[in-house]
Length: 113
Length: 106
Image 1: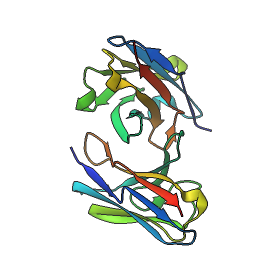
Image 2: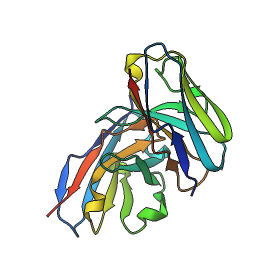
Image 3: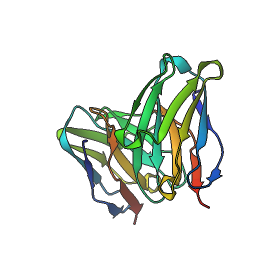
Image 4: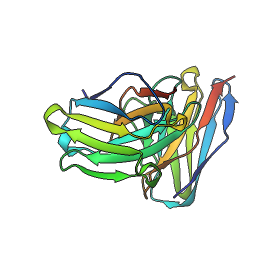
């Protein structure tokens, strides 16, 4: 069965960076888009972008240009999202999802000094 | 960017009641997806391409619409249907979600 296992909770300082992982199993990793979504506390869902692991192509929501960088490692079927120059506004739960039908459990990122 | 406006923001329904949630797009979209999210969990794809039920979704749910107006209907509300429902368009970038309708049981 399709599973997406995300890395654990992160507590990070302002102005730093964090890299979240999403390990995929149960399907062909290289043939499906991996999307990333943000959910700020008490808020709705925002699409950050996608990566196509087969060729590394990416598409970003302009709002997250320069904030998020998506990468993928075909050898380990793992997608990554790096968030940079973190502020309190970046405190949120981040989800990975393939085709939007399957989602990871979410990674909570808290930005605090 | 296509803005999706969901209504109502919050509502409560009694068991057995018919419920309709609405999603309006700022520009025409080809289809709409719907997600169910319970507190503290990941969203689940609930209805895709406007009217197709995702795997495991009870057939008391249905979806309809076209252009700028879409809806999700529950024929007969059940306790387990209490959750937040989000619509999402995939017709143009950036992909966008509605702000959600929180559905509670009376």
